[in-house]
Image 1: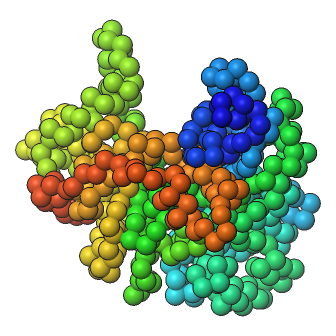
Image 2: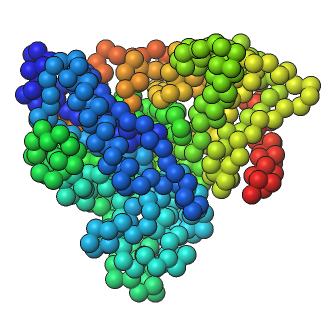
Length: 530
């Protein structure tokens, strides 16, 4: 069918993802092919010690992103969107959006980036014998209880960013199981919140006198393929301010960026994994069995269809690289050399490959914010060298690219070396992998495992949630998500795979020894800058 007609007849799926720095929309056809895209840049704010986004900015960003998509459709196909086959929303996982019985936000949105829940996370991990990271929604709720915050007694519902947007557009207080697994532990056998742990939590707060129990205020869990409601009249107007979009469009369960990353890289099957590297970085491996013990560095979450996943999540990845590239850009501009940003990134990334395997002794810490995996509540970006180290541009850039994955490697080594977790395919996606062959080679060295990058990986999470919307609408009876992705979306695609070299692996390991030993320097920097 002609693409213009296909769009006009609504034979499409739309995915919109709220990333940490960009809201992105991708419109796809029934085969998953991207047809048009829209975007909107935004940034979190640090207000009164809290990393947050204002809810007004959520809607301003969503509406601007959708209008940008409409402009792309108009430019490419000289038409507009009035109906869509299915829609899905995804966003950064975790965090805390709490509402009262009248749907009023009780406190500013507390995002995943906050490291203010250490006490709650430690107590819940001990109580549940299950790793509860600081950024999880239940850690935020319990920390608010421990802090005796006034608002907690009025909580009628709490959710994630994706859950909030979906609720406002459909009226449904639901969440995809992958996103829900970052709010509270999931029982893999039931596909729902772990009832034993729910009961333990209720017992913990028994003496507080709240008028709610945990099960009353959590969103309902849905799995990939289930219908999660339809776009209401109000929701249609909220999404499309031009008023052209019709109500009644079915929506798939809202998901987190981890789940959409797995979908976009076809890594939802056992012994597959992916690394998503952008502002933050996380790696996920679909496990064959449960881990032998609790690791504070490893989260247990799920795929969008409920399989157990070992996840290492680090708060910091490319922000420090971006800051240094900006310095080089300013220098170039100051001497009258106008360089295209993409060219600058590509040049500097490729320069890193000329560096020594261990970066010539140079060390970098990219901690814009706290990094729980290595034990930091706060961060201070830091570059360290001794006078005798080999201070070259190549080693400098290589050190920063290593640093972006160093905390991640510290956590992954526990899974691979301590637990003997096996992975057959590891896929990379995100801005870190944009320069061909560079981030991929360094990630392969970090994990001592082959890393593949799909041609479609650049489409990212917005494409992933569009696929989940399409799966809900088009799946055949009993067709699993993995079969749908294998047979209908990724058939014949293997991506470009890169094996680790012995020299790179040895170099990264040598760098890591200095990096871990030098954490004391980073602690001193954080303490000195308080």
